[in-house]
Image 1 (tube, helix red, strand yellow):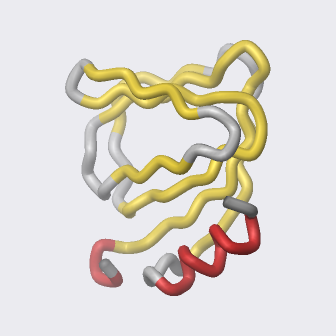
Image 2: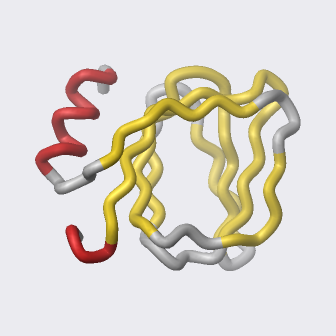
Length: 93
């Protein structure tokens, strides 16, 4: 999926904020939650999200979705990661 189509899809699903996120190689964040639904398209590098002990690796072209309030960890791969992300408040879901 290309970035323009992804962003159009996000808007159609009620995502109010669309942003770019870049994390350096080796980036890691311990368990935390977001107060918004997140949906992201990986455009460079790779990213691993772990929920309930299950790690899921996302590479270029993959899309991940994370509902608001989901406890998770985040890790960027050896090349870091760059993704386009949409954020949607729970009221808009």
